Length: 57
Image (cartoon, rainbow, N blue to C red; front, top):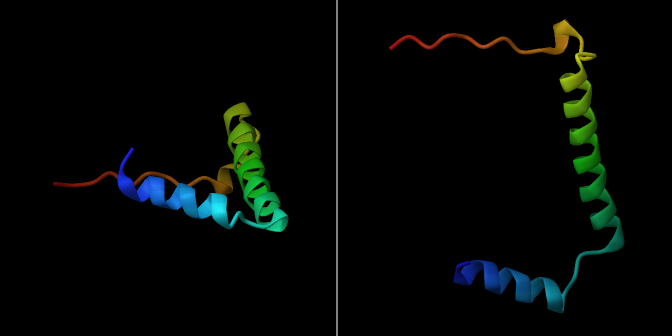
């Protein structure tokens, strides 16, 4: 862990984020996990899936 992480943690302890910000972050994480789970189960529609374009060197 470097000094920047320690400074950021000390700033969070002195001035923690609001409850609304915490709910927003956890909501975004839950949405990402839900989309990942739907894709893993195979329920994600094909039209919403990006196809990989092969790179040419």
